[in-house]
Amino acid sequence: MNDVRTLSDLTLKTFSQSISSFRSRSAYLVSKIRGVKGLATRPLIFSGLGSLLFGASALTFAQAADLTQIDRLTQQWLDIQRQTSQLVVDWQSSEPVLQQRVTLLSAEKKQLQEILNQSKDSQEDVTKRRTELLQQQSNLEQQQAALANKLSLLEDQVTHFSNLLPPPLQNAWAQQQISTSDDNDTSKNLQAALGKLNSLMDFQKRISVHEGPISLSSEGEVMVKQLYLGVSAAWFVSADGKLTGQGLVKDGQWMWVEDPSLSGDEIMKAIDIFERRKQADFIELPVRLTRLETPSGNAQ
Image 1 (cartoon, one colour):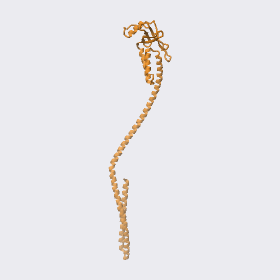
Image 2 (spheres, rainbow, N blue to C red):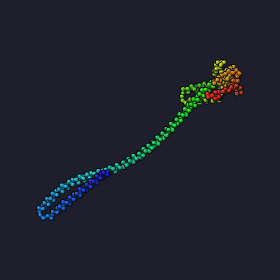
Image 3 (cartoon, rainbow, N blue to C red):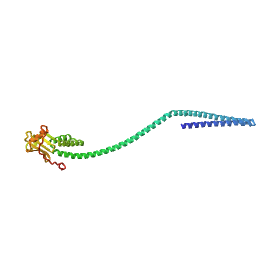
Image 4 (cartoon, rainbow, N blue to C red):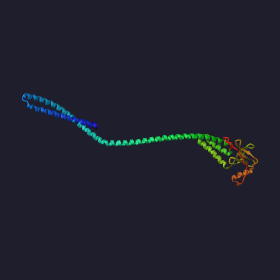
């Protein structure tokens, strides 16, 4: 827009200079004509007129060239004025749209900057959270390794105790061991070990009766009823009441030992009371305490 205005001013200045030049030459011609009135002789008049006509002819040609240039410059000036006016009109019509676009672009730039700031903050939060999770994972792996070591010790103790338990509890532990024998999952193995200990505590807190074959060194395998007082005391009696004995731990394992001194009637009476076939009454049965050895060598 400034270049167009500069070109218009330059054209107008050139046009003004041409008009001034034309006026100067016209004044010069008039002064020449007036100067010939003081001459005394005709030859001089004709000579002056000839010179004057020649000068006027030359001035006419110069003026014609100036007029042609003036017309051309005038036409250029008019064209430039029209272009200037058109540019001003175009600018006035386009300015609101461009201004609105600038406003929209500024708002969009602001929104994008806010998004970038939020993304940066989110990335920092993600990095921080990832570091925390990696630290937690490292701690959990260390805890799992420690748990695996302790679980291995616990399983060794449980395996040792399994040989010291009454046969019904040994069978229950064997079934639990079969369900986890092929599983290397620490959590499941821990649950299985805890399950065995829970069944041990439950068996220890109650009186129970079982019927099944047992092995005796003198009789071989015989069918008897077994009365358990926790895991520390057990008695058995045959169906006819003639074969009696106790269960105990000997040489690191559970054993059944025949004991003829025991009263078969008393054992049968205790079983009948437990199964509620007889009313509760006092029963006298011998209890033999057993010293148990743990894998670490501690006595219990």
